[in-house]
Length: 515
Image (tube, rainbow, N blue to C red):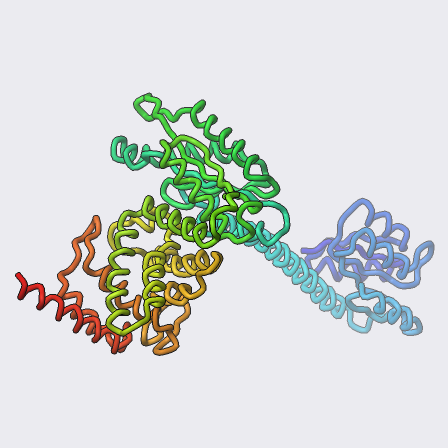
């Protein structure tokens, strides 16, 4: 049933139309002219208006205009005489009239049919309006979910700080600008011992406790992230390294002043090491900046822990440039050694095999020196790999493997940024390429791979297979040599692989004879 406002100044017609509409089940409210209809519209609501065009005080066009203002969702049907059809046309031009009827009505039932169609359109418009409203609400909800997912995608699940990818992206974004940027790396002292002593749930609570203090200590325009198991990073735009040291010292003091209390009620001592560097000292390369901060962090560890160390530029101009460069590189290799004892041993082990291959191939003394340096430095980029990935016992996940693979690019970037070392770059950057083109980071194949890169690929693989790791023993030499031969022509340059295997087996035979 619909509520219909019926406006017509002819009482007889008004009564006739009213009875017809009531027989159809509708509630009819009559008005003797447009003015009375307008007054009723101001005090009541209607589903439909049926109005004559020619009425005293206010005609149908004026009532239509009024209805469009006060009741825009109400359907409108026009009654007009045969001689006033142009009025109906004008009414239709407004876009607010559903249909019209000509007087005198030849079939009164025609009114009911038009009214039903008008009410059906009104119902459809209301349903469409509801659908649009629901869609808008769903869009808002989806946008909220999208924003929440985007937020969670950047957050560390345990601490709520930015995750590894997000904090490094913030650093790149800040370095793309022009203002000074400082970085502070934080690492807990003896976190493994706390985990082993009190259990991982307590260790997780300690990490959350530290994260809250870090977040509360940072200004809104600073970024804090968790980069590894017990490693954190702050990206601090607009401040110097010395100002960053003051912030780091404040965090260190806040951690001391707010001890973590375990479920048994015991306050556990928590100490962090801090390494700070800024773009004034290192330039705007993220690799250089993080390498400098990492070096400062390990200096904090080396000198006893629980302290803040700022990377300082060496101002000693008396030392030759080449000496300074190799000193920096040796410091980086030492820093990697602090992170992972295996890496330096592997570098030295691999270098020996690479030199033997190079000598067997008749390379010059200058090239042998390049091989020696490249071998020792080929994994220096692991300084930028999180400890949880670098030291993980067992197989890496796909995501962790992608992080580990970045060490090649980082190694090349570090070496490329230092003076007098361009000849070493090809060897370092290509030692994980494969003969069949399935290696990384460039996917080169065959002789597209620089020769020294192919030499180091064989030596690197053999060293990795035969050296002991904390979580597994190295495989026997003969088994490793068999695998090198199996990889000839797919993973390795076939000529270099065969040369290396022949050389190693000949030496093994000599040793057995000597024994």
